[in-house]
Amino acid sequence: MGTKKILFESLAIAEKELKIELRFKIPFFLDSIVWPVFVVVPFLLVYFGQFLSGAQNFGGITLENFVPFLLLGTISSIALHTGFTNTPIRFQREKYWQTIESIQIAPINKLSVIIGHTIFSIITVLPAAAIIMLLLQYFSHTSILNIFFILLILIPMLLISISLGIIAGISMLFDESYLPFFRSLVFFITFFSCFYYPIAIFDQHALLALLKPFVLVNPFYHGVTILRSLWFSGTTPLSSIAILLMFAIIMPFLSSYLFNRAWKKFTIQG
Picture 1 (cartoon, rainbow, N blue to C red):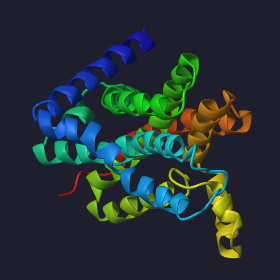
Picture 2: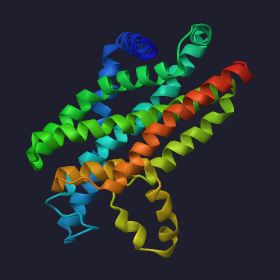
Picture 3: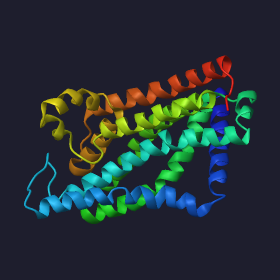
Picture 4: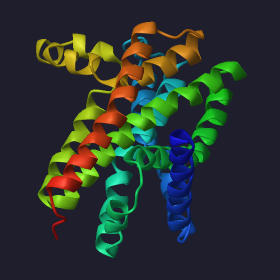
């Protein structure tokens, strides 16, 4: 009964978020399809310029595989920003509308909020993911089974990013001075995820080598590593899967716990 209740609550939350976003269809489709794909364009130009100038290999990236490498990084980046960037915005919006208190009053399991936002995020990510998959198949073919597993791996990545987004969202409900901190955190997670460059660059300089451990404990680095391994070789690195799944299990419960604690201890400010 508890599982069934969480499922119905999650679907209701996902439906509510989708209806709110679809009120303004053009911004929704720009944000979910156009801009995520455009982000990769400058990196494509930089890599192409390097190879045109005579470079043969950059950390295992070559002229033949740099486009799929970057597109797979783009999908991973979308998974991070869909949850971590957009979820706090939705919390802040409901705060300004003065509807956020309904979540506090309603007998809703806080895990339902996380799962509902995850379902909604999967819906918003799918169009951009489909476009990127078509582009990937044009530049470098892989099996349908590998594409299925790639889409499956996006789910734990979304769970982690939405859990982070919920922690950021509830923090800003009670004190908006946390906003710069979480914006900086998004930047650092992106930097240590190797979405657009290989991890090999961290071996090129002593200072960068000191930062490499931050990459190796970053679940989004392991997420994009799994996607690239699946696409290029059809393999799945077990250590990366273990780290990604560990974070995907822990983070929803952690964010749910902090959600409940924050509601009991603090009052909404601003």
